[in-house]
Length: 387
Image (cartoon, rainbow, N blue to C red; front, side, top):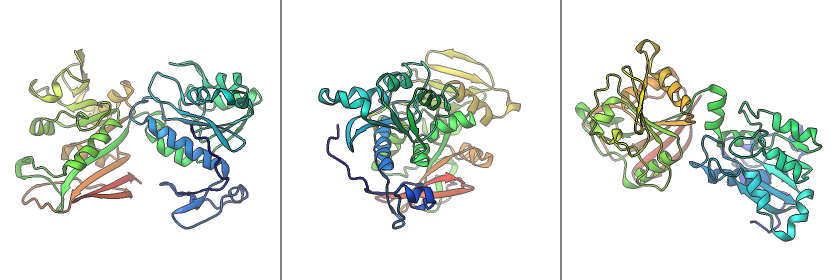
């Protein structure tokens, strides 16, 4: 628990959605002053909400299909409790926050301000409603980053708190909170998983050798980063040719974390059962046109060819409650997602010291916006979002 007092105005580096762009009168009156392009002075509410978002991110890869949520309880500019949603099916952020308050501070709970990075839930799911806990704890002021798009919440949590005399202030750092939970928002608003495209390519934009010969492109450090990415997503998908040529396991063996649900396209069910993807160690969805049944940890999802592969796949993943999927190849599958405009984010690894002669061309993004770039030895990693 953080015990030391935080100043009312603290300089933070802005996130992807640059807080320095806030120039309206209400924001200026709240104490947000325009600063340098990369830094901004945060108001007191934004300062504590920033901490909520930091805490929430600690649940990445462990809470889906729930959202990542952080909560902070403040009394007289001192954090007396904080918590986050640590694991799906277990206590929510508000519960962990209130339960973390030290014995000597218990009497301060009802006088504190609760900061939450997402609207408190108002229904009984795996755990009781957080609105009931807030009301029972006699907390009179709650600051919320953004509304929860889930149909069983979607503003009802805010309404219940206000109906019971709780002052609710929102939104605070709304864009930052929505970006953190972009998978959750996409799933509930667009009724499909959040789609991340990923591939590695040479400096001359080739992703394999001639006749799809496998060539090692990224280095061992980048490989570990890729496995970290996998641990943060609900599903991972490849096409038929990649399954045959690479025989990938699609696990997080190089990183501690959950294994995503594996998804492979095998329209005619011709992939050999000996492939790593088709073992029974982890759940696997086989998208095909032949049958629909469950065998061990394998789900055979049948679709009609006339309906189209991508819509069928999105339906299959939504039915399995998978909030996100990372597409790791091959080139044809990646290109089909790009052509359809069915992608949200792309992560492209380019080995600037590798040249592949007569290789297979890497896909080309459309309507992309670069928002981050990093270098790991000779590997340049560019992160894009769809415009």
